[in-house]
Image 1 (cartoon, rainbow, N blue to C red):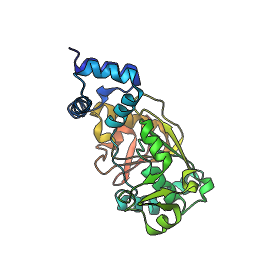
Image 2: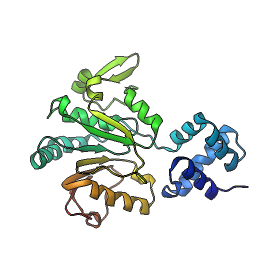
Image 3: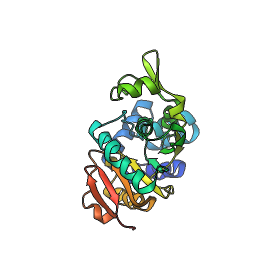
Image 4: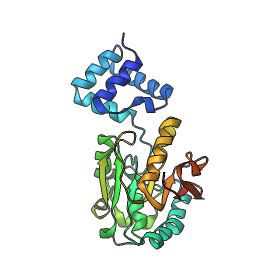
Length: 260
């Protein structure tokens, strides 16, 4: 009988997703649950289904991706971004800044970024790269349709200006959608963008091993311009940020101080 090690190899061949980079106990439990839910006898029959059935493959990718997101998550951090970080970036790099929302999930984060930036710039001057490994999630993000729980944290002026009510849901305006370039990207494998002024990557690295996190932080350093900013999640503060060429400027915000 084929084991989980074999299955990880098959998944990598099929998708180039390296399951070794994820915490094994947590990920194996999620996959075992999905195999049982679909009624397969084990890893071998399930791997065959992923190869032969596009719907099953898409379900698998969607299932193992962690998609917990909401607009303006941790409001106080967005206040720091608006009142301190963006003014600093504009002073340091001019108003033509390059932003990357990495592992953007359902798009709540890059859309939130665009709305905050609209206080400083006309919408046609805002360009944000937003990436995720999951094509299904990116399709949802591009659709821009959210339930009422997702938009609870949206300030009322933004909600009235940039959302349209559709039944019990809320749809992001086309003007905001045009500011975002959604692309598929595997943080563990694909090349990173370069010459960035700001990287926002929140509440996803907690799911990676320490080795994978080390590699990602090095790549974030290389992707940023000197003095560029990395904005991380509430559970992801860097211990010894100098190891990665960063220094803390506020909680969850790190400035690149040296190249690696």
